[in-house]
Length: 262
Length: 308
Image 1 (cartoon, rainbow over the protein chains, first blue to last red):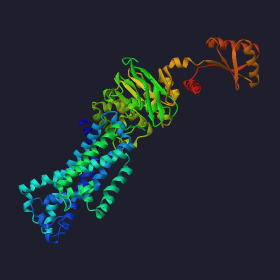
Image 2: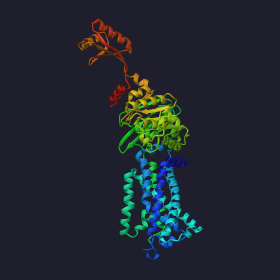
Image 3: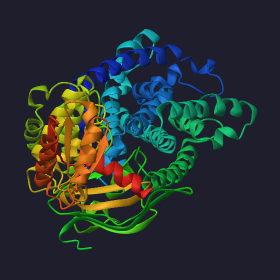
């Protein structure tokens, strides 16, 4: 599997990809920090306990709360990236090429996912720092005190937020991979994924209250938000983990057994 | 089946999709060190057979060995097998060299092989161009370079000249001929039988998923007759010459403006002399007198026709 991870990273760690990623990270960090800070309201005006308040942003973890909140709006993007990265290998026939070098199908799929997640982990770490810096520069304009952000508690919050975001990304990555493995086509996989995680789950959640405690996309959103009034972050995490486990078995079995030719 | 002297040996290899048998009980033998031509019409089961040998498709039934290892465990032998199945499938935004480095990492091959195999296929000066900028011929050559990364004992090439223009075909044919000069075993499928005829010493013919012939190429071609062809200067003399040749005991027949003599004892030189003498004695001038050897294509088509 190490060989597969190495091969995947060789594909990604190229100057052009790194430049595009760096540009996207810079844009996201500044834009995400600006929008998140602009959206924060005084605690007295907060609706239903959702969203960041100017007071909570002044706490030790305020700086990385900005990062966590901004990232939570990119679930769709993360899903698309992983669906595209995996389904495109089927579309181009490159899984066939890779299987001739790595016949262990589960090792190949696992290694590819691990390589992508390793890159995502690096990108998230840099993005967290960049978002924190941007938020630190913009916070005074919203009257947010930032003195506590550089405390030891602030560092602890940064690590916790980073871990939570990484778990959240891994959840979307797994679900995206499963969809891609099952349908093997970029447009169809995106269509299915977007229709499900976008309109379907949200429309159903509006009509049926338990949906937010059941559907994976809503649970991942709840987890990224640190929990919601309907479901706690830990409950969301456990439920998503169960989904991911089942999805991994289904995707692994499908990938290991199906013919790959033509 | 002797797995020590055969690079590939299968027994009853079958692949069924629903009720359709794409490969039907194939008992395949490819001797080690041979250059084997794998031929058959479209849909005969060639690609599916190759895909089964490479672990990409699971056989419905049957057993076999590749390089002495069981077909059921492709991981045990794929490290010594290089393959180009269908069109080369690589990453379009990566350069030729980057593509090979990715595959070398994946297969655990020494990355120093990358410039070596690029030079082997004549792509050293285009190594840093993106794959999507390559011509069809260059893509095929890069696919072959990828197959050579592990210096394989068995090289499987499925239609390596497919979709190429004449120049591209020449490039790939030259390359395959060079690869065939080594000690490795080659299994090559192609519709271009004239090309296979030049490089193959072993033939496998399949049709409708079934084996129609396998054995030495020379033996297969030896089953077809070499004929002597005479062309009279004037078409009007052809009928008379046929009559006279038959009177001399030659197995002669007229095909258009040509007179075709099949030597009864295989002595085409004697048949040519006899036909020429018959023509001279009758005052008929031959504009052409030649010995026509059977081509792989003509005998292959005759074999398929006979098996249906």
